[in-house]
Length: 187
Image (cartoon, rainbow, N blue to C red):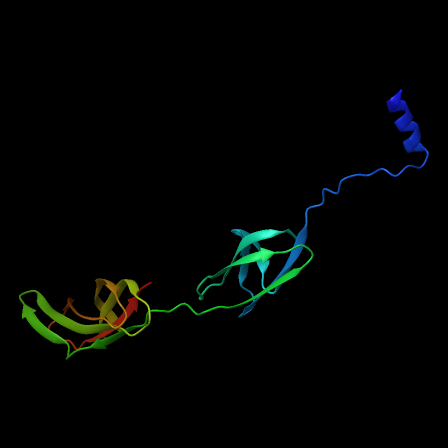
């Protein structure tokens, strides 16, 4: 009988009290210099800067911004109920290696019974601010615009400010005039 009475009372205009289960949320506003960096909130991609993220449940989150050619930027953010939390990241360019090659001396030649070997000698420098990895020096022995022989010297790792001397023997024809062209590849 009590349940029936409550039902009658509620259908005749009583106020039903209910709990509010809505999660408190806030807004996160993120910008960066330069703009266009990827935004991750707790390692979940959210978009690119500038970006406003609304209805984020209150709490502490890890905010990460990244962009190719720049160091990652990270901070911890606290989202408060009904508030906007703003962060502006100034991204720092990632230091780069810079490989410089200097030919040392002239192209030295020496003869053997089948032909002539030419020794090409170089000094390879890293003038950049970061280490260079997997450094290769590529050399071509050129005669009349034709490549007669090629060699690759694997140097490996060069720290900033480091230099190394390298040489390679290239096979040519006796009595011909040669030049050496070179290039480098590295990470």
